[in-house]
Amino acid sequence: MACAFSQMWQGFNSQVLNGDRALRWHRFLDRSLPNEEVSAADLHILYSYVNIIFNEYKLAKAGLIDPVYARQSVEGNIKQLAENRQFIAPTLLKTGYDEELVSLIRDYPDCSWPSRLRRFIPGRP
Image 1 (cartoon, rainbow, N blue to C red):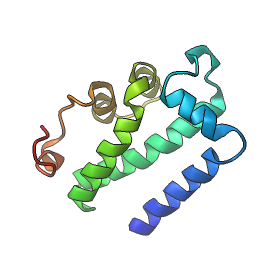
Image 2: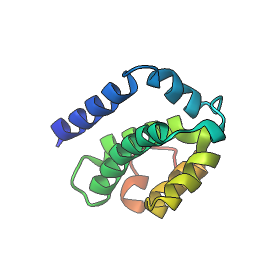
Image 3: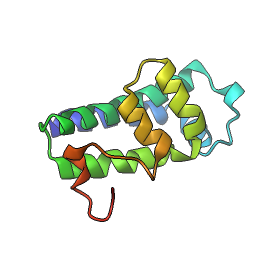
């Protein structure tokens, strides 16, 4: 399973490191890229990123991967999206992403974690 996630992250990293995408990804995350300039290629990178998070999230909820790892990974990656969540959350909902996962992004850091993952980071709800 870990191998699958490392392959997914390698694929994502190679997308971002191709051409000028790293700067655009950074600008997208910190909101210095205006929403009206977000391209299909930018959304493709976003969806690639979110798909990895979503897979970890689903597998952890099902008890199929280490919940401590998953909670830390999902939370750390959601944190990266938090600055631009006003654009990201509705975009993900419009394209059919899971409402529960999108609510974690939209409400970060005050999100409500599912009970299976809630107990794995002390001091976090």
